[in-house]
Image (tube, rainbow, N blue to C red):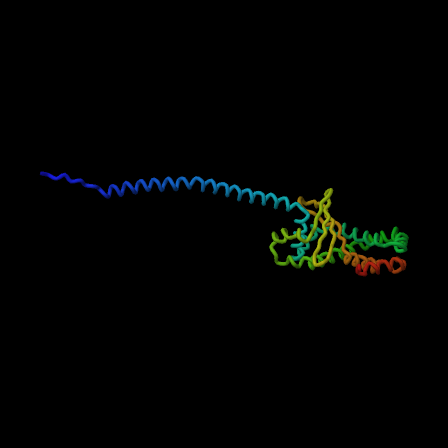
Length: 243
């Protein structure tokens, strides 16, 4: 009698089980892949939005008075006179300083200036104008270099981003007024849009130290008999630091 033998192919069973597990693994990986792809796309869109928003903000910032002050700060530390002159309107700043000297003369000094300056002082100022302008320009460059020492060697982008920490800027009717606080010193700046697109120029500076320089220049260059005693006393007062 022949015996019927039952043969079980273990290799085939193993192969079949492995195939089933393989399909299950592919399904699991396929199920995770789609959410991960969506997350990656969302993160990419967020990153693109941040970069695009930053670029638009930077382009807008480049047209602001603060950016022009950052350029001026960087130029002062690099002794770049051409760039400084593109932002500093020496003619208007000089005229404003002369106006400050006149306005601060009160009482008898004011009447004395009125009697001496209508004719002679105006012509004297015109003749002194080149020297006054050069004096104002040189003194401003020195002051800028001294006050912006903290920016020495710093990358420009860092200077541009930090400038608003030292300058409180308000814009109104196409004019910007900046209050600069550096080294416990307060300087008032008036700025107006320049001819170059996006640039602003400084047209007036209120700084007692520089007013004193103007007073010294006027005193030295006007003829001895041009100023009366009251005017002389007022100019001396301008040289004294405010209490």
